[in-house]
Image (cartoon, rainbow, N blue to C red; front, side, top):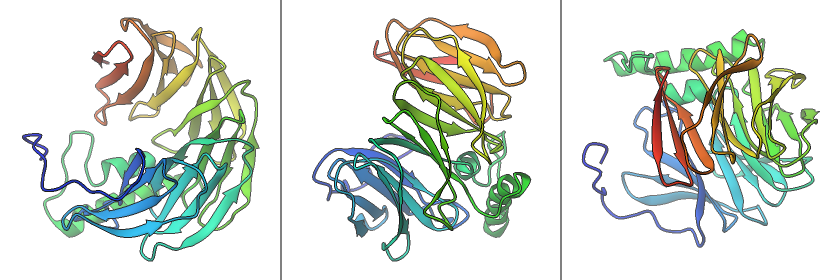
Length: 299
């Protein structure tokens, strides 16, 4: 329960190992928000109905643990695995649509260029949405379509990050071939994130750097140097003007996209910073660290 924190009914059981990733069905495809997808170390991908507490689909095909799942705007589910592949699934029938291959090592993470639009759904930056259900659905659909059309695309794009030190940009709705192989990092790429407007994708690596790429072509744009140890994760401000990275060196760094330089350095954690997220209203950043402290920063 979102208000009290109490569990609603029985837990959803079925996976045989730890669950590594979750993704909700997009609002514009199902305004009742009943279905959620899970990926597990047991190599399985499952879709659950949170009202009936039942597993609707169980999708097998990966040979090693699933590291990340994404539920796209076209009714497809994407799963990345330690078996070096990304699989594309039909979210209605649970069948395999295609397999994306190219990485030479574990695939660590996935990002969609419509991630931000899917996350906020029908809500504006003040957390308000139309009262009418049809209007809400239309608003959510328009936000997704805007990102796609503004970037001169027809469908959503997917970016993957790997232990092989590369990223790949995919057109997963139409093709199993990558648009481009993005090279330059000298160590594991741990995380990728598209800007809310879909124009850029940022990659965080254990080579102490963050790299910026064109979100449509995958071409290299800039390298951000400021951390002195592994960069674990990055996230974007709602207006796509600022990028924030979290590192093993216990700091957060805010980067200005226009100048490609450091805007703020945020020390304060006593140990490695593993997780970071920027609030949709653009006013707050939350960071979680190995020091067991959750910090909230006001922008």
